[in-house]
Image 1: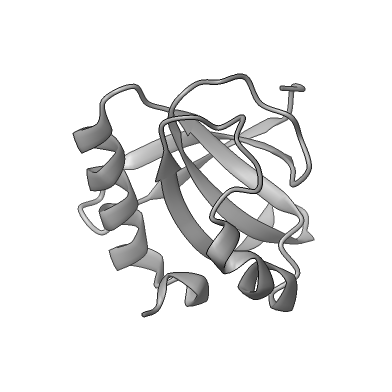
Image 2: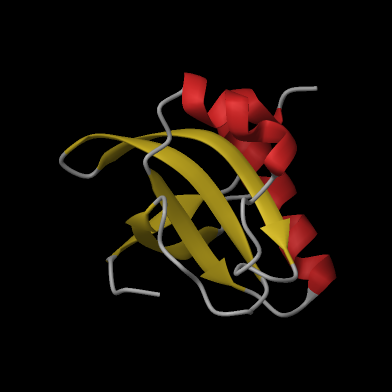
Length: 107
């Protein structure tokens, strides 16, 4: 994974999660984590379109069933938070989704 900028994303609970921001097509090591698909809006502003978690960030594409939604929303960056605990990953996803209501997370 190439180096990128870092940014905190707040969840509904008020917890701030520190993510690394990289280009969408960045290659990752086989590590577990939480990821946010986003579109750069200029400066340090992003529109979040999906929050997910995986046991292996190297498997691509991430969330294959959501690829059309990512394209519609112009996702060009991925925010990544390494997290080995599966329960914690699900909690982080839920917290961020409840705070930001990303459109590709809608049922």
